[in-house]
Image (cartoon, rainbow, N blue to C red; front, side, top):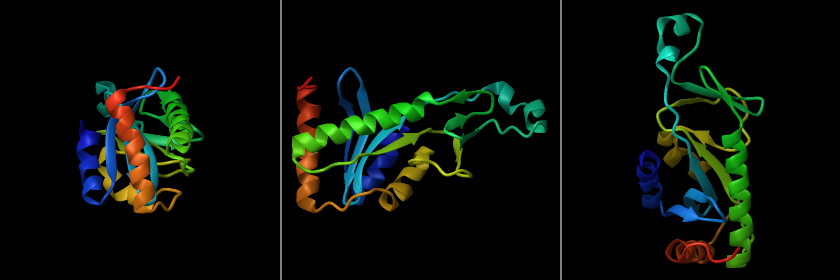
Amino acid sequence: MATAEELLQLQAKGYQVFHDIQAEKFNIDHLAIGPNGVFAIETKGRHKRHADASANAKAKGVKGHEVVYKSGKLEFPSWVEVEPIEQAQRQAKWVSQWLSKAAGIEVKAVPVLVFPGWFVSRGFRVPFPILNHKQLASTLPKSGNASYSQEQINAIAYQVAQRAVQGERDK
């Protein structure tokens, strides 16, 4: 919900935004389509652990609310994950292939990974946007890898809207 609310700001900037797009045995949480690209947004909710916020954790220099991208991994205060990065990349690849075929326009979707409620450290070079939900509206207009005309945006958005209404069509 927090991510969807933040994406409203992108709609005010002319982006087409879609939620919960059904794919092949998975879903795309959000798609944002604008003049600078198509963004496949994966949102991950992660609970903050009480132990990570304790005085002991703070004494060790661990921030209980921070996730850091480092060496291909997401480092949380007391655990490490790689699957969300791989998932976001897989989903963006699927979106690229589907929309390129469906819209007849070369689409290279940009993966975006969002962690609502977490401070996302940008100390290391990330392969794609990994953000707190509040960073979406300011980051995505400066990101992307395309330059779409309004006609192309409409053609891409039409295909997404059709899938949103009809569900998964092709297997």
